[in-house]
Length: 83
Image (tube, rainbow, N blue to C red; front, side):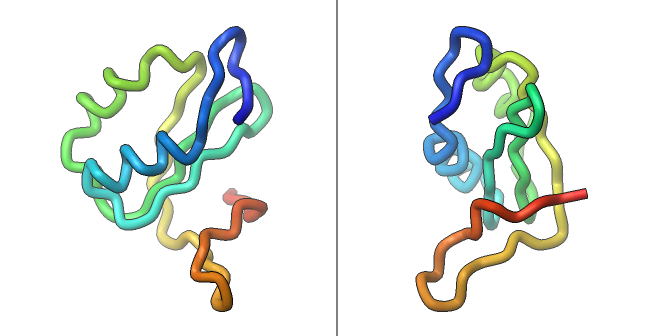
C-alpha cells in the first residue's frame, strides 16, 4: 500500500483489475509522485479502465513488452525498473 495525496493505493487490487480487463501481466508501482501501472498484452477497454481508477491522482498506464517473473516462486519481481 502507498499513498497518493490522501488516497490509499493497493497495487495488488489494481493489478488484479488490469488482468481481469485483459492484460496478461500487470505491475503497479509508485514512481516519483505518480502511480504507474505497467502491463503486457492488451487491456480491452482502456478508457473504461481509466475512468474506474480516476480517483487515484496522477494515475498512468504504460504498455511494456516484458514483465519479469521469478522462476522459483512464479511471482512478479516488484523491484524491476522500466525505462
